[in-house]
Image 1 (cartoon, one colour):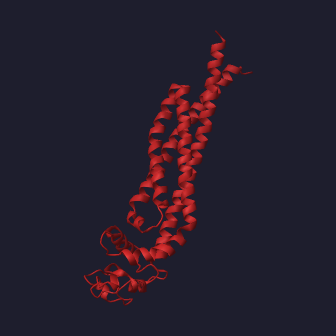
Image 2 (cartoon, helix red, strand yellow; image 1 turned 120 degrees about the vertical axis):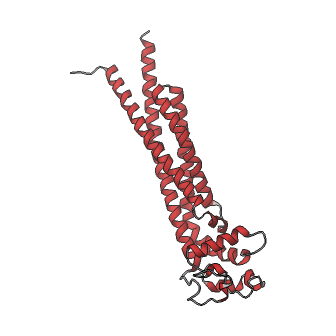
Image 3 (cartoon, one colour; image 1 turned 30 degrees about the vertical axis):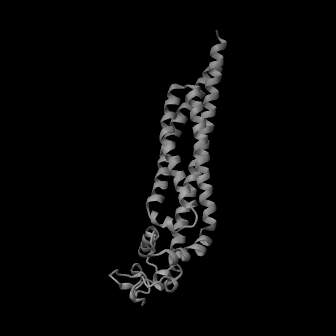
Length: 259
C-alpha cells in the first residue's frame, strides 16, 4: 500500500517531535551532570585554588556551572517549543543549544590544556607559594589552604618536609621553635611541629606536589570529559531541532499553497 507524501511528512514530524522530547530528557540529565561537576569542583577542596598560580582550573569549573544553569532554562524552553511547534521558539532553542555547546566545549578544552601543564605549574610555583606566604599577614587563605592540603593528603612540604627549613615561617621566628607547621603532624597537638621525626610527621615520597597534582589531574579529566561529552549531546540536539524546524517550514509552505 503506497503512502502519500503528506502522510510521510506527518510521520516524520511526529518522529522528530518524539525524538526531541527524548533529547530534552537527556539534555536535562546532561545539564544536571555538568552543573554537579562544576559545583563539586568548586566546593570540594576549593581551598586549594589559592595555591595555584593560574585561574584556569577555577575558570573551567565556573564555565560548567554557568552552562549547567543555562541548561535548566533552555530545557524548559525546548519542551515548550516542541509542544507548541512554533518555529520562532524552536529557532531560539536552536541558538541556545549552539551557545551552550560552545560554552561547554571551551570548558572541556581549557581543562584539557591545563591538564597538560598542571605538573609544571605546581613544580614552579607551589613551593614558593607555601614557603613565602604561610602564616604571613594578609595570607590567611593560603595558610588555611596549606594546612588543609597537608592534613587531607597526609603530606608535609611541597617536595618534602625539608622545604620548610627555608620558609619565612621558620626563619622569621614565627614558628617558635617548630621546624614544620603543626599541620604536618600525624596527630595535631599544640607545637607538635617542633619534632620532624617520621613517627611524628608525614613523610610522603614526592611531597604535597605529587598528591595535589594527582587530585587536580583527576578533576580536570572529569571536567574535560563531561564538558566535551555533553557538548556533543547539545550538537546532536541542535541537528534534530534544525530538522524539525525545516519540516515545520515545509508544512507551512504546503498549507499556504493549498489556499
